[in-house]
Length: 314
Image (cartoon, one colour):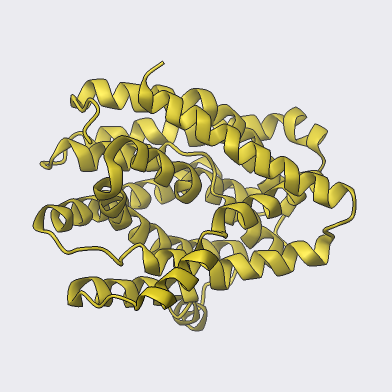
């Protein structure tokens, strides 16, 4: 097994260990439905925005800016195509699960799965280049994503979404990056301590949601496997066909491919909980797609590495 494939498998195992802890917390009533909603709000509005902001606290270099801009551009292009594809595939607006299925095949769990993998392959420079994709992802998630799940598409909702903590964090982070404004040591350490809770808290919420939805239902629902196949195989292939034509270096291409090949986004479960839009289905898709990604993501990474000629580019 290649280093890249091993890194993905290792990260998947770590994720499931934390998910199991969240499931056990729910089963033994250490966490109830109200607690799930409160933890979801904490992650969405405090912890995750801090993680986004702090990713921009790095040195300004030309090659990093170029990579950042390319992953941002390719991210925006692939998301536009994915949104069109999702609406063509899932057309039944009357089904309660349609919006969840659309969201699940469009948006990836790039934060937990993507970031550690990219760090393992490309180091800290790769993580910064990745933030171009992360920036665009948050713009789409907190506008199109949140409006599609909430069902509210008016201008007021769009403006409210643009003022979300995540997008404020993106704007503040970019300003600090280009102005090279660095946080004082103690403040930076304190905020990093909070930001580092993103993964465990999100996975605990996801685990509790899976237990609430019913584990047996998760692995016996054929619809979930259809959505997972689209997310893990069809969408990355469509995205790769677009990415390969971009006139840029191979590293931004492979980083973007890794991000779009990740399983369904954990944040979809938290949005579904917040807006009461079939959170059981969201949790089932998250669980099954994450499990199957242990097979598909390493294959995508190895194929991308071979095709693009990127071997151990640290």
